[in-house]
Structure formats: C-alpha cells, structure tokens
Image (cartoon, rainbow, N blue to C red):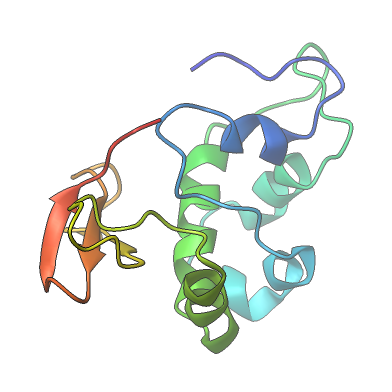
Length: 135
C-alpha cells in the first residue's frame, strides 16, 4: 500500500484505497469509546494515528496495525443497533446485480478471519450471495 499524502487524514486516505469500498467513516465518538476497543491490540498508539487529522507520512510514526484495526472497527459498529440499519435504509451498500431484482443488498464476509476471504453481497429478496464488484 502507498503511504498517505502529506497533510491528509489517515482515515480519508485509507477509505480511498481500492478494495475498501465497504469500509466507511465510523463516528469518532464510537471509535473513542473504550468498550468498542476491547480486544484490539495496540489501541492507544493505533488510535493516535487513525484519528490524526493532520497525518503526514513523512513525520508521523506508523505502527502497522492501523489497516487491520480500522477494518475491525466498522465491523463492530455495523453490528451495533444504529450501525447496520442506518446504512441499509440509506442505501449505502450495493444493490443486487440481477437486473430483474435491484433490491438493496448487504455486504457479508464469508470469514471473520482478517484477510482470509473477499466481501460478497447478500440480496435478501433473492436469498443469494454475489461477488462484490470492486469500483
């Protein structure tokens, strides 16, 4: 992965990487809540990098866990009551690729193991999963 441009937010840079289309900006108050960080390694150092609005790759230290950590935070947020319902109802995810359907779809991960499998989309009308079409 390339490093962020100087003077950009780490989160903005990370969300813009191809393949991260289903990751999204999680509310800062959710990220900062200690309960939501339980079980995540190096959260103090990693949190400092992730929340740095003036991230500059030529000066700021990067610990290497940021990508994994920020990949897990949206997964936790989306499982919260306000997370998934809000995003689904707004139509933030893809629609079913079948032209006869076009129902709002949900992203699903076939595995909860980091970097083990690619995201798929699930159509509740067709009751089927399809490969995610990366943009």
